[in-house]
Image (cartoon, rainbow, N blue to C red; front, side, top):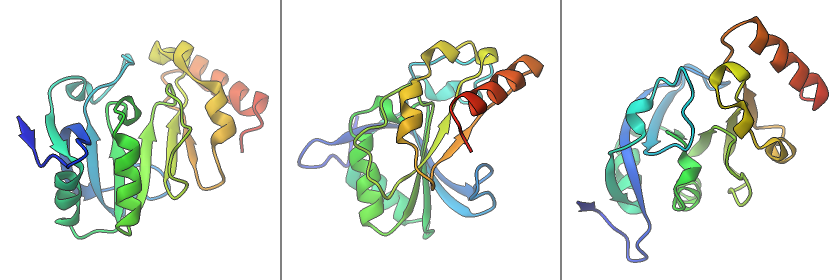
Amino acid sequence: MRTGTTGRGERLRVTEIFHSLQGESVTSGLPTAFVRLTGCPLRCRWCDTAYAFTGGEWMGLEAVLAQVESFGCSHVTVTGGEPLAQPACRALLTRLCDAGHQVSLETSGALELGGLDPRVTVVMDLKAPGSGESGRNRLENLDQLRAQDQLKFVLADRTDYEWARDMIERHALE
């Protein structure tokens, strides 16, 4: 089913769009519109959004933007799944910024970060060994993170903690 397609055919498979308080990152507690895109190439052991691996609804960019606007809040988080797995995600991020939103992208860091609108704040997850996906980290993405971006680690045990500490030291992450 096609919903609100654009003339250029820029569509996204969307699992859900909802309004809530941000529960993670430096924007924790802020009213936020969340756009959860469908699909992810990773299968982390403790993933809490496996329901976003498949399904969803095809939506045009205009329909996504209209639903986000209906919430009346300035902050928008695009998440997944892995949002960057969808080619039209970059266009969505730019359109949200153009509409005056403060936009953050929650990404696994397993896909290329290049070509993102510089107004977007990246919240990148570096996968620890306990995730079962640490071999998928694109460490070259660390060089693309800027001062306003954020790096997060989800840790399962002491081994993950020591791994994260080593990564911070080895890559001079502060």
